Length: 239
Image (tube, rainbow, N blue to C red):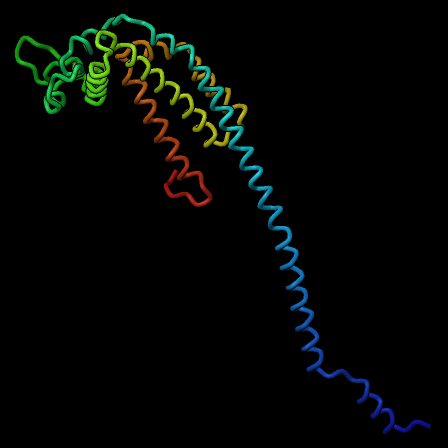
């Protein structure tokens, strides 16, 4: 027969030591953490490679679209072959001492776009079109043409610069539409329409329209920078 003392002895022998349980649990926890770390480490290279591949594909798509959009502006470059001054170009450029670099810079800042004093004497008029940056650009181009033997054909490199500005604007429109998170296809179509639209002929061929082209450039740059700062996960500027 089994006595109560034997039962108590059996229970004591089969009981689990709490300290042993704690050590076992700690070992299991360390083992699971080691397994999780090993899995994460093995998957990190593949995920990084996948991200790099997606980034490369995105850049390739952007550069390809940009080349397409800029290519649509190339027909405008035919105007570089024109040897005539059109309409107001005579008054604004080749008859204007300010635009030919013959006037001190401080005087240019006191003149309107056509070379007239902003506060003219009696008998002279001005419509106050003050564009000193454009006038100084003309002056720099005129002097460079004289230095490199392009005298008498200054309108050609001037129109070339206007074409380049338009090409840059077309690329900036593509970037702006992408910053606004339009799909690449629609962004490319929008920029292509901007690049090829005939409304731009006036400010490309007609050098007096340079101010419109440059104002577009600065507007697009400002919009892109602002949206880059505000469309992040943590905006730097208020919308």
